[in-house]
Length: 588
Image (cartoon, rainbow, N blue to C red; front, side, top):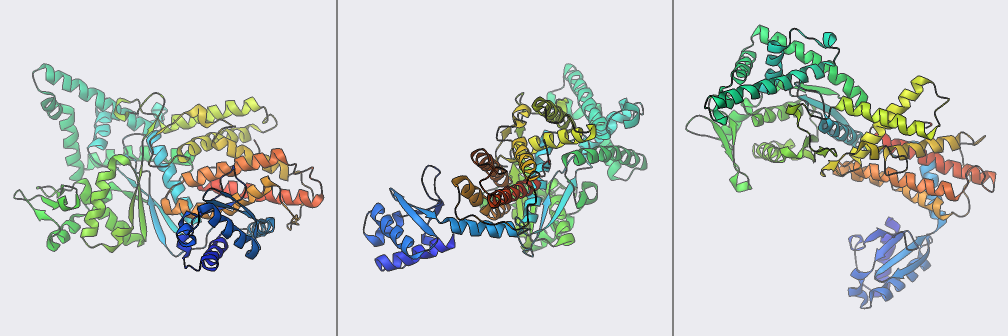
């Protein structure tokens, strides 16, 4: 609406002999209860008009109506000037949208961005928290791609450490050679089972030692199982062949399991990084930081950085024995990723419990003079709860991703069959439909909320075909496809009417906002902007559909126009949902 802004600048100059800039003009969408589409806030102009906001609005409104052909009328509500834009303008806007086959994809901007997400541990299956992480990362990557970025999707797998050794040791001690095949389990579930076994047996040993007079802290450190796990980690780091072989075998089981879950979730990656390859990285950076005076050594030989002047604290970056801590390897991995891809921006999709860690990581890299560190961003997100309460993985009460997906498919099947519209579908088509509706419900529910917010996930609420849900948007898309299939001989060109019904205009206005929504979502790394836009568009289409017949319109030209309006709505809904990783069915 630049033409309204520019005309307002001229109006103030003409009426009040005062100079203002475009930044001084505050445009807003007109509230739905008032007539008009664009609202100009008039309060800032009263200083130069020396009149009340209503009179100032009246004078500017009269000027705009007399001098701007697109302004069809105006009204004033207190200090707000509501402008009605002529139908001819909106029809011209729609013509541009309709004729643009790539509408919803911005031109390449020459920038490269990396999105790192998932980052699972190879000692347990993916759970509900991982689901939010994966869906967020995948969606942000898709939005950035639509916004013109070259995108690299990466996964840093935590495949080493004491937690991995716990699963390995428990399998070794209690597994009796069990394999995914012999157990009839997915590999990640089998390995996760032994992580839980370790924890139970470890707790028994702690209780036994406490009965013998040890304190809780002493018992935790002296329990034979934890000592064996630590010994196994030392052997792994020393390259012990037997330990390495077991590690490779169990990780292979996990990766096969993860692969199936990722496929069901519909997420993928361009590049995998493994902590087993990166955990020694970063030591060169520590040497560099010592030479630059960014780090300092304590008497015991440990290396630190003092961030107290930045409102943080002193941070250990290398232990006295020369071994890495998490921040060491993260420094090294950040450098490795930049060396590999030279991206302008790098987004880490990690839960908000790691907020402090990333503040420290980014600050250290900036202090080391890494110019690319200014492009690092932590996409911090809140935890996901279920009505039953917070998940705790070590107690084996975690909400498993595979179980959740199966539950969503079951719920989708029940809801869809209740509508009674799938009777003539082949069984394979039905199963596919239940999967995409179930996944649409899950993904939409998790993505419609701002990532920073903690959320309560209710599986039943998420599959409501009439609510603020993925299935409602999917159903709207299927409805439009059904309507379009009944329009005979629809040409690629459409004849525009002379005027618009309110609901038609509302649809065009929403369609015209799609590019801005993509740009905003990309700028803020926030899929909820796209999700909520898709819901508004679907809701607006349904209102249009109930108020005005498409197939029984007064003239054939109007059938084609409304068909064109429907077709573009379906395309934008499909593109929006695609950015959320959600498939839209042709029929439901």
